[in-house]
Length: 349
Ligand code: SF4
Image (cartoon, rainbow, N blue to C red; front, side, top):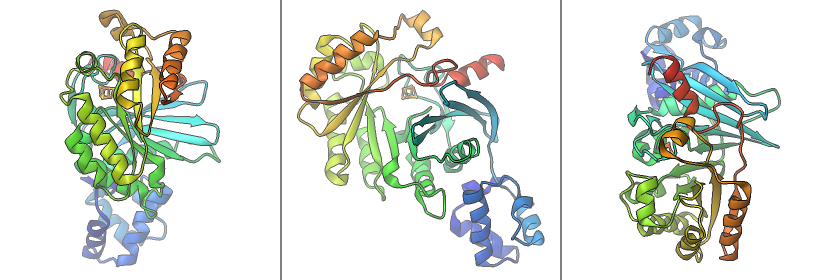
């Protein structure tokens, strides 16, 4: 059965009228789905019972359900959603002062295989549908304490968003739509590991979202080691990102996951300065969140705070704007993909 989160407004209206309802009742149903976040037709009180039953015969309200939640002491919540076919994906709620950011996934697993990432360990299993992307927002919203609202969305969880634009763009539209979730486009950021052709298509989307590029290094040889599937040269990725800036007027953020001795050396900082120094951008440094299996098997280490500070300072000296992401939810399943990894372990893979 199809979930209502997968149908367009026009499809919902057709479904309602085909069952004897009226167009305004389709809007009422949509309001229950997106604004009230109900999971059951029975909860749609102002919709006639006969119509609710007729819809329930062919649709579910949602396709996913919460499989597991991990709450960290700092308020970070990692949620594992079980999809209709039994696959699982993660999303993470990150409260920070007045802001509450949700990080969502765009694929089950990830084909990019970054050397430091748990999500990439087993490749990609499939793309998420538009409804499965938006349902992560509904799921997270229902887990917020009273008085908290989701203020920001980042598409930075499992998966490479640019490889699933067919689902991502309608999902973002729904998240942005005032009759849907209603989040301002300026509060939505999509992160890519760099696919210039797809970035062009993303740039054509209306409205304009923020773009972040997980660059990790400005050196092509080193990037091949860190992001083995990356085929586009750094200069092409940076050129595509700055065309995005030219078209949208949105400054691009470059993400750099720092690994001790791999990409946090003075020459690595220098290469970033030479590549990005003259461009309007911010570099966000993310000291690696250790994943036990990867630390053991690949000899990866999180850099010490003084090393991170020295790297940040070298970038600033080179004229770059720099932020350093502090560790959140570090006490449990901290790194990207780990909640799912443990779940797979527990389930026997
Ligand atoms: S860091 Fe992101 S792009 Fe890289 S493997 Fe993990 S999920 Fe994929």
